[in-house]
Image 1 (cartoon, one colour):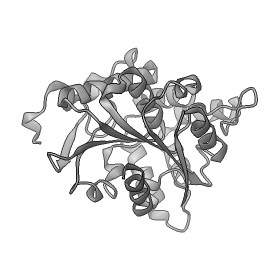
Image 2: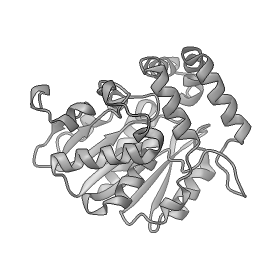
Image 3: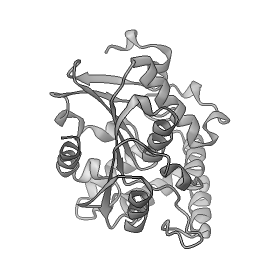
Length: 270
């Protein structure tokens, strides 16, 4: 789909459509500080059989920065509304939605709002709440999140250079951390700061029980952003969901273990 054919909605989110035009639609959604480019090692494996849709959240990648509305995007519901607008614009149904990190919860919100559009959810490293609370293990204390956000506000580029390799979690392959750092550093700092607060202070635990779409939870090992108890909580909270513990380590298997990620998604869909 060429750029001169894009509707305002598709242009806003820099939507690309590739693959089999008659195949089942599969939508790939990126996480915080990233863009649709984070899927470049995964999507080619689906293009023969699926209609592949990638997009950038407003404020990321090649999206329309002028469309950023702080009020709209003051919760994840604003991003979920964008997802539904994209699906409506393309008139998609039986959609496989693959959401990484914060986009996992964005997909949950979209699928609970309009389940008729969705046929499957694949949640990669999901977290409905990052802060520990009342027996729930999210991986962070409130003061940890406050410090993280303060550091991000004070020096976004420095924060990115420090945090990206830790989030990637594969020190033996430093080029992966460098790739994530570059992605973080290409994001508008003001928008990234706001998106970080919305992401890390969100609480979508109650939304999980409302999911009626068949769901696969993919959990990485040694993930400092979404540790194992979080993945187990998501699995236990979504009725009928499946949980797979990947051999991949870190928070970004779409970069560090694309073949394993692809294999598990295909196995679930088959």
